[in-house]
Image (cartoon, rainbow over all chains, first blue to last red):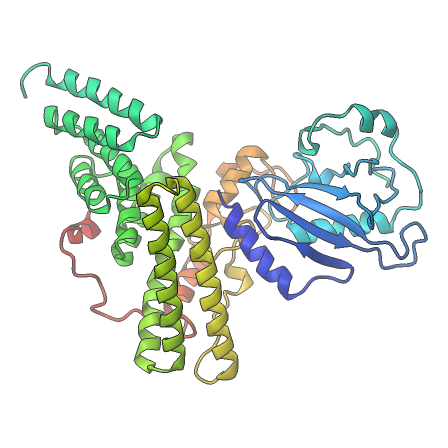
Amino acid sequence: MFASRRLGKELTKMQGQLPPGITLVEADNLENWLLDIQVLDANPIYAGETYRLKFTFSQNYPIEAPEVVFVKDDTHSIPWHPHIYTNGIICLDLLDRSGWSPVHNVESVCVSLQSMLTSNTRKERPEGDENFVRYNTQRPRDINFVFHDNKV
Amino acid sequence: MPPGNEYAAEQLKAQGNACFKNGDYEGAEGYYSQAIQKNSSNPLLFTNRAMARNKLEKWEGVIDDCIRSIEQLPENMKAFHLLSQAQLAVNHPNEALSSALKAYEYCTKSTQQTTFSNAALISQHVLKCKKRKWEIRERERIRRRGDLLSDLEEMLERDHKKDLDDVDARMESGSTSRTEGHEEKEERRLEFEKKRDDLRTAFAISDPDHQQKREVPDYLVDGITFEIMHDPVVTNNGRSYERATLIEHLKRSPTDPLTREPLKISELRPNLALKEACQEFIESNSGWIYDCEDGEVDSDSRWAHLSHV
């Protein structure tokens, strides 16, 4: 019930200025937005790449977390990370029901994902990636990830 | 009242409710009217009919029903909320604001959870009323200056009105459904406001001495809705939020939004000084907001008595 006004305000702010490495690609409606992120330091895993994120908002955003996934297409790949599955689904406590807080916003989520990539040194997929990608039918927000590894 | 009428009224009300649920608001209005003929001393029948009329956009009828309901049941959150919506729709933002504040007061007084979830809606509506008040004052101010900006604004307004009339006509003829029509109108309104604000900003930039763009300072803005606060509460760590939205969050996750430490609804305290500051900002800002002048209150006497309820 708050979503449209709050998103309108976020959009106005983001059209003004965004942190380096974050670009607003498409925000034609208040349900789905596309943003691009880049890792700007010298981390060799991500150097020179641009990754595309898709945000999906419910009516109850920001009380409820947005659904955020990486999108794969001709010019964008899914970044390597032990918490990012091949299908673009991200396992990050910030995006989970229990870790989300309504003071976060689209910009702060992008910044968190940037730093999640920056600090990673392992060119790996999560354990069980193949099975998860093949069998998962749930939407990201309905999955109960177990956050067993807080070091990454 | 002849015996049995009360029962008959209840039966009719149930039929009205069934119609309402199915989206048949005309039917619902009819049954509620019959129920009121049987028993005119039940305030809930009036609020129910007001809800049906609200859907049908029969604003005058909504206002009459709400006033009759409030006469019988003064601490009537629902009636004040509906009344306020109708008053805003017929362009009486001052009355709408005072009704909205009443609704909010009764809503937060209530201990029922279900009633409380209305608080967020009512809070938003309060802001809407305040905003409409600014807009009217602002238009007046610009009109008095009688310059190019006001001509341009009038053109935008005319276009906008034409768009709305066009949607209305299509809804009337049935080629656009009611829901679609309302969505389209909302879209048009946002477009219009955006254009108008851009226009004003452009003029403000070219003439900084006479106009300054109104920007609400961050410390008056709720970190959840990004709107200026009207009933701020403070948490254990000293941060303030709009009461209604913070409670929506706490119902889902009883943690401080910033620190994630446990936080209970009962630990919240009103932040009166901040509330005053928000109020003062709205009232005394000299940029886009023009000060309210005496005698600006709409002179419609039908609900004048309500401000003293």
